[in-house]
Length: 165
Image (cartoon, rainbow, N blue to C red):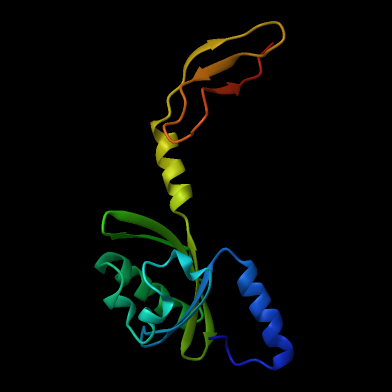
């Protein structure tokens, strides 16, 4: 449900929301979900299921507490740093990043992005180890590294380093 805007602004607002890879979630000061817009395909259930439900009844305890603090800070008009949280459901883990902004006297808009792919890549990179350095006249010193586990079709990764003279 889009905010109450004049028709001339409503189309521009809807185009913006639809162009983002994020969800826009409106949450009341009572911590109840009021609306979901944008990329709602990343939710575990249809967006309508969450409407009228408190944040604390949906998110895991630790994430709900941090979310609640961020909501209160945003309602007070304070700048809130991005909040990262994870949801585990039936063997699936999804990672999200939420940004909060006061959108009315009694309401906050949370701009939420699914960052699962980025988190998985970070985890793989932390396991990533390089071995051996070689160089030729045509190439600066390079390290030959084993492939990333999830990089399908990648046989190896080469990182270039300039030779110091």
